[in-house]
Length: 273
Image (cartoon, rainbow, N blue to C red; front, top):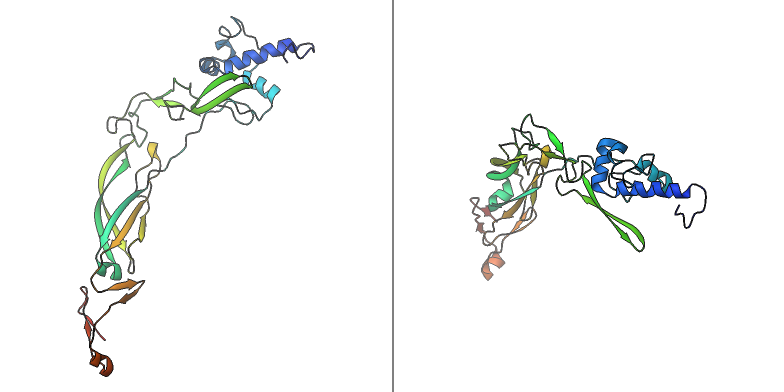
């Protein structure tokens, strides 16, 4: 629609509308004004004191460039504005290492230990906000959860979209922080954990304890706890799965005539072979 290229009637007016719409869409402050006040909010800032377009700038770009344009943040596949939906984030998984006695790896055991992890703040229920306070629109992104930088290059317009660094993509920020957690929504606590070690485990075995990892941010579900096992070795005993092996020295005569040998383990009175 550039008047130097398109000589059709009305091309000049269409070009002015597109230029004015782009001026709003590519400027964070003007987009915020349009989001809050509509066309009236940008009439005094676009086109030297008067609005150069007569329709929604988002609709205008959809009309001329199609519904698949993706160069502007806060726009879905139809070209309309959207706010990034809050996503529930699961907490971090944790690892804890336990050393087992050889007998515990054979017969199983119950182990108890103290774990330090993050739990959801019981005062603010994970929001990080003071009870009764309200969230406010992020001033950095104007509530869109994204920020955009647009540059004019010899090849056309180049837009780069990224998550808002101030609100983390939520579009809202806390106005008053919870005193208990200082706005984090989580607090670090120590908790006693009991795990049952089944018989037959070996070094490198991993036990998963569901829901005992760190609590998720903003009330998200907790991660899991993974307990890594390390089995102590005892002299003279080798293990292969559930089988035990031991090497014993006997005399040449005992090898010919046969004999009775008692093999004693640290966890039993012994076996006679």
